[in-house]
Image (tube, rainbow, N blue to C red; front, top):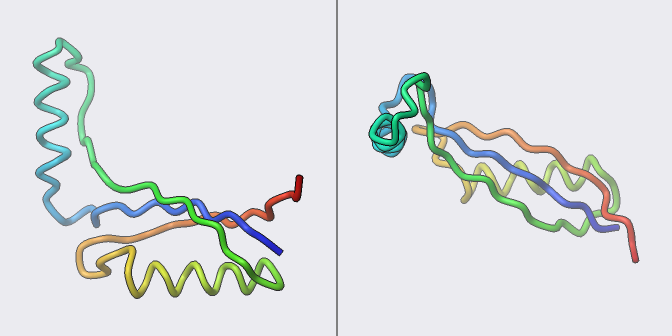
Length: 86
């Protein structure tokens, strides 16, 4: 079976986020002043071949732990859904 994993990788809240600060500065320069606490992360989607949703979740966790997220500076969340065959 094929599954799709939608993964969000974000900097830990205690870590400074220079990209977020730059985006916030740009927003304020555009006159969008009622925004604050901008955080910039990554959104990753991938297809996983697995026999079950649990196995797809295990493989996604492994990908996040080994490559997609730097656990010292980032955390991740994901959702796995089964892809319907066309």
